[in-house]
Figure 1: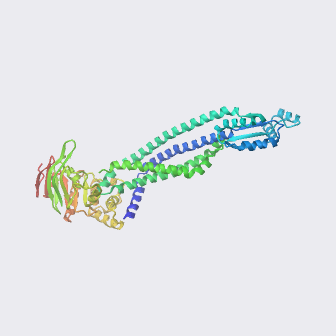
Figure 2 (figure 1 turned 180 degrees about the vertical axis):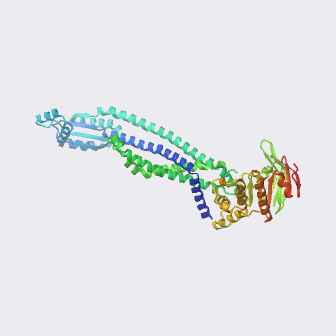
Figure 3 (figure 1 turned 135 degrees about the horizontal axis):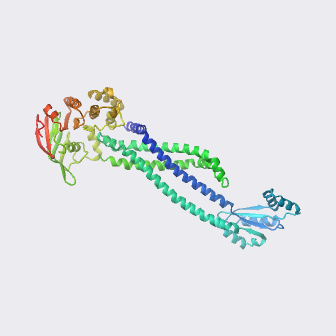
Length: 305
Length: 226
């Protein structure tokens, strides 16, 4: 009995789907558009976070030592700074490495090349670059360096130049996140209302049929179940079609995006592949819940015959 | 078979659709419920299939007191009473066969039984060759015959027809009445709600007359006298 009813419900849901094919196409289109706005938001958020992370990673404290300082002096300092709890890593650039780097950076400048050739000794000293766990911690590290009198050993500590950038970045990052959240919420609400209304209008067109079904002796759940199932079919198809389109579009846009995001190391396709199950599952569940609630409320109105 | 005991139905704020109606329909009867528009005929039908609840009095159908029938029992009641409406009430996206089968499917009937019964009832109403047509592809008379076929699938003891010929021409009206008479001859109680004077007068069956919600006449071999 249960099995018979179940197969009938599935058959009715499929029949409803293809005998009202235009309504089905419209509903699925709305779901696809909703998913487009949702996924775009997720991807933009991920891109912005990655950008902020990349820029934050570029921030560091550079401690330049005099060219007379040898590595045996610098190495213990490196160990010492590495031991700070707020420090993520310390890199030592030796005097010769610094020179190589400098030569490399100015290889197209014949004047500097010539000047370097004139010099007998390496004018550069070793450098320590310090990276913190968080941009907010650099001030703390600076005061620790002062406390340990490392600033006295160094020729220069280069941080002040970055300070303003970091502060601005922090402010921008917070604003972007706050704005992103507000936009996300607004979009989510719009999407909810659109899907909710689409499903309701769909069921409204079946209003008379629901009444007839009741009059010929159908129980409420026998009427409701095919509609709920139809909603799940919409959600599944909408999701699958959307992801196919989105992947195609991402593949097409990737070269342009790559050029745009080259500095921040954000690969859209890789991001989508690695987060596919998470985003797909999340969106599928959201759309199914939304469809179910909308269908439930909409049908309930017409079941009181 | 059907008992109305002092049944009243009042719609807010103060519209009395039925007032203290009492009558008893015996098994196997063919009975007319007549009256002008708005006299409570359709209300009586809606009360019988629990589409509405009575304001006062009691209704008993086949020994079952349905006056305060719980919502979950309503589908069971409706599967025992066949109903035919003026506007046919066919599902537009289902074929004739599927419309009839639907009434069986909702009650969990086996597929084999559906495959057997649906062609039988289609034959009774003479539309076995139109099984795969959608309602929009059928004439009014044919749609009404499909709706009668659907009402018959549960082999109901009672068939209620609410103005079944209201939307039909004279020829189709005659055909529908012939089918209803045939069904009655098989032993089904038929309650025919109408305000078609010619049908009532030609059949010479029992007639219950309603006027402003009150039963004003109940005659064996009656006539339409309003």
